[in-house]
Amino acid sequence: MHPQPNVSLRDYSTMHLGGRAAFMVEVHGRTDLTQALDWATQQHLPVIMIGGGSNIVWRDEGFNGLLVVNKMLRYEVVDEDGTNVYITAGAGEPWDSVVARSVNAGLTGIEALSLIPGSAGATPVQNVGAYGQEISNVLVSVEAYDSAARSFLNIPASDCAFGYRTSRFKTTDRGRFFITALTLHLTRGNPAPPFYAGVQQYFEQHTTTTYTPQALRDAVIDIRSHKLPDPAKVANNGSFFANPVIDGGTFAQIKAAYDEVPHWAVDENNVKLSAAWLMEKAGFKDYHDQQTGMATWPTQPLVFVNEHAQSTADLLTFKQKVIDAVRTKFGLTLEQEPELLP
Ligand code: NAP
Image (cartoon, rainbow, N blue to C red; front, side, top):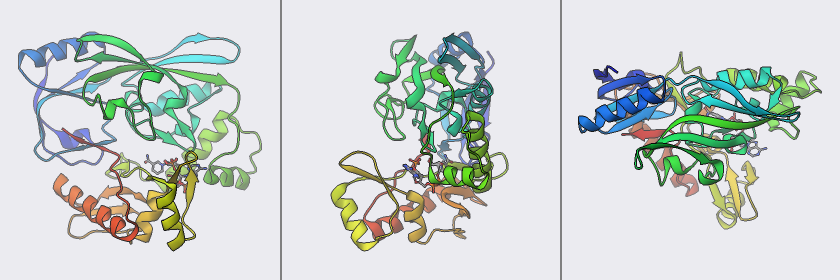
């Protein structure tokens, strides 16, 4: 266990901004993790654990503590029968490799979450979802180290307080648990329609009529790679805002002014709007901000791109500009999706 001193946090966020960490260590297993945590306790240093850094914005002030990078790899079928397959994935496993392997085995449940950057362990934190699938729909339990009790535990999905792009890991228990593995319940067979409009159109254009997990994965990969920037090539954090979920009364007011507003019912009282649409209407389609060096991706304004920003302060200035413009036009406040750390 050899923590590396004075590490640039820009290398640990796909937005490539932020200050420095006092120390960084990679952990490959549970023993590595407990040794790292014991060391941090002896040094009186706080700890932050991350996976791939795809959903993290580091503050310019940096982190005077120990950054633990989770590299715990594992993909194991832990139980199965004729219909159901339970897999356990290490938190440091690249998420898309978990998806690829499950799809290869003919399993449905996470194939619409193809090509989402980052590690498996990060997916429950914000209840990652795309194209109609959400990690909370298939998650059985999370294995984590509880820094309050100083022991490992299994947290069943029903205790994760999942909501739309949220969980207890980013709200009430932020920073408390270090996720080490996930167990997922997948099923043999095919995903069932209806699919998101973009996926349905793709199937129609490609005259696909047998909806296998592989067909859905291929469609999502093709759609995403045409529409979204590759974080290995273009500095970004994916969607920068969650889609706002609003009550029926607020929705009625917006609909009266903008009849064409795209919307989806969440339940009998609440409606989800498209943050991307709100941003476009507020003037941020393919927007390049000279002052901050930030931009919005031409085919998906929800993705902020760091073109030549110097600091996280630039990013936060741009973020505020977008929030203010959307609030002025629609009276809604967009919520940041990537986590601002520390
Ligand atoms: P889109 O199909 O134009 O969807 C726009 C938004 O409308 C999405 O954010 C989606 O919300 C919502 N939506 C569309 N069809 C829906 C339906 N049938 N039921 C409920 N909500 C629906 O295309 P898009 O903006 O490219 O998004 C497609 C998917 O990719 C979405 O799930 C989105 O979350 C995901 N995405 C992820 C990132 C990222 O980098 N992480 C970036 C862009 C889009 P939801 O977000 O709730 O799905």
